[in-house]
Amino acid sequence: MPAHPCQPLNLCGLDQSTLKESNIVNLVGNWSYPTAIRFGAGRIEELPYACAQAGIKKPLLVTDSGLAELPITARALDILEAAGLGRALFCEVDPNPNEKNLDAGVAAYKAGGNDGVIAFGGGSGMDLGKMVAFMAGQTRPIWDFEDIGDWWTRADAQVIAPIVAVPTTAGTGSEVGRASVITNSETRVKKIIFHPKVLPSVVICDPELTVGMPGFITAGAGLDAFAHCVEAFSSPHYHPLSQGIALEGMRLVKEYLPRAYRDGSDLEARAHMMSAAAMGAIAFQKGLGAIHALSHPVGATFNTHHGTTNAVFMPAVLDFNAPAIRGRFDQAAAYLGIEGGFAGFRSFVGDFNDSLGIPRRLSEMGVAADRMDELVKGALADPSCGSNPIKLNAENVKQLLEACI
Image (cartoon, rainbow, N blue to C red; front, side, top):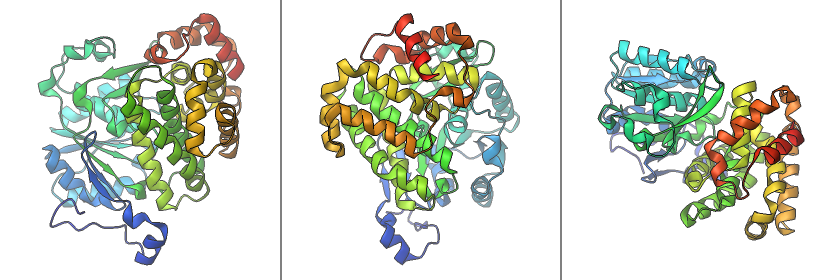
């Protein structure tokens, strides 16, 4: 259904017979969970209406430097400019965004007199965009709002600017998240910054924007979504809503990531992967685990791609957690059409990684063992540790790192 009576849904100018054959014409919806989501191909054209819905009249579009040069970003800026919303862009965003990027983004926001943020891109651009909106009116440093206890209550909620999120990858799910991951550039530690009002007011999920993703980014991002679902499903915490979402998210990745990887123009596959990414981020309200606890310090120290790093860790973490998760993955395997219960699922994960060009060892990504103590310490300090089904300690974390490096 069109989101505005004067704005008919534009299905990217594709031939209608092609749309019907691919089933993409049916993959359209306006959702209200967990926030307002406009889902469907071509819906980037509704960006001005999304800003109006969020109460934004002068947005700052935040994205990474690579994406800033691509046609999809120019298209978004053209749409904003044509609607009288300006053409403000900030793109000084590193692959693992840090507080220096954030300070520059806040300065640009204030200098431009902006009143809201469009967080545009993959996880890096969206995470930093959300933090620019969060920090623009705060007086305390970013690290005072780390996701520890009730630290989020330290923030002045009244000065958090509205956010519209537009994902251009299908992996992180940051568009439906209430937190961002920011790297401390001095300590090289990734910190999770949380506040309920960081959840974007409106999301535009347009799978057409992901068509240009290269294969290795498609694979890494998709496996990030898969890792979110796997770890949420593994978490011992009670949250049956997330458990069900995680299971269906795994199915969508299993079915559609290979198609998106083989043919980047497959809009049906791209749409289902965009859904799976959001589902993974919703599901991990139940918790993450050792995959992310290990991946965060590795990414912060060696600047590796987050989703790909998760994928390398996944087989070893599944083996490690097997005594605690075998029964539930026996059930998951049956739902996913995988024979052999947990063992079959574990075998599938290894083969899945291989089919998507994922390295088997972190050394192939430039990760070295000479900073082992630092990585162990970082993993044990990561909040994801608390929801791993088997308790992590210095000894077993070191063993997992050694096995994967």
